[in-house]
Amino acid sequence: MSTTHEAGWAHASGALRGPSWLRPPSDPDALVPHLWSQTAHKVDGELHVGGLSVSELVANVNTPAYVLDEVDFRARAGAFRDAFAGYDVFYAGKAFLCTTVARWVQEEGLSLDVCSDGELTVALRAGFDPARIGYHGNNKTVTELRRAVAAGIGRIVLDSFDEIDRLAMVTAETGTTARVMVRVTAGVEAHTHEYIATAHEDQKFGFSITSGDALEAVRRVLDAPGIDLLGLHSHIGSQIFDSSGFEVAARRVLALQARISTELGVVLPEMDLGGGFGIAYTTQDDPSDPAQLATEMSKIVEHECRGLGIPEPRLSIEPGRAIVGPAMCTVYTVGTVKPVELDGGAVRTYVSVDGGMS
Image (cartoon, rainbow, N blue to C red; front, top):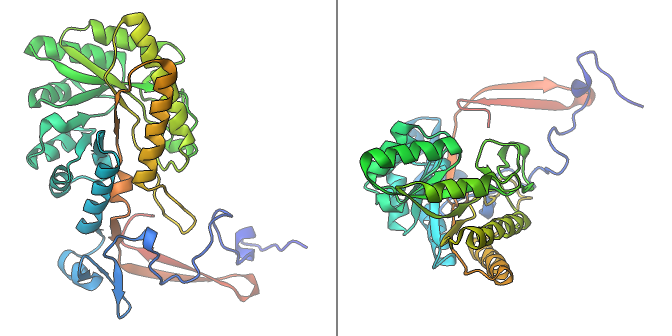
């Protein structure tokens, strides 16, 4: 027999809200290792990160506040660097970037992705080597491209025919050469939320392989003076736990590189498979470690290149969240607490904090 309530169905039930797969932790106060940074621990019931208690941190900076564990960040950056030795690892600055983080990234031997003039400013102010910076963004302006070219950015990722024309204009007026990657959409339906999937056809990023736009973009870039094409770029989404999406993307991108070699007579030396590697937000999440990812991705590329009869391109990847996410937490102050009585004597408690609804 169903239960009804004049205030609505939700008021009649004390059941947990949320997806059916999400289970509450057995001990809400426990610090589950793969959900927290390396130095996070409790002393007399109080959280400490990086040798400081939360109360000490709050006394200095107030709330809300991001708390970033340098030890953990550097360890994760180093793990990607070591696992992908011989490849290029670009830290995706859009995950989190400030001058200090940019310095850590450079000191750990990683390159850096930026996707706005603001992020580029932060990187250059931190003294980051511009030759190790990649510039993303699907709507880069002429002003932004001029600045990137003037700074000597290592590579600019091109997303549209308009952008090819803009960059060609900039290099012509400055008499310089820009090194670029062409971003392609591989038509991959990544196993992630639809709002953070970026390799399906109906989206704002890149040139479609299926429609022929990707090959046409490569032709235009090769014909444009002042633009040096390094290779192709693909990104299938964020919070990816299943490597099958990377396998499909690599197969399709490498097939295009083989076609470029055959039809246009050009062997592209590089390929970027992007980032989007998932991290744990719940006890149910089980992300891959960098060594496992490196093994899987290198096998995929080696196998496909052997089958296509083309040389293996130099591979690059772009972890961002996978490095900074587990290393960072947000500290809030609890404000309003509102208990709501439900049918059957259950109580649902709403706790408001001084930050975003996260």
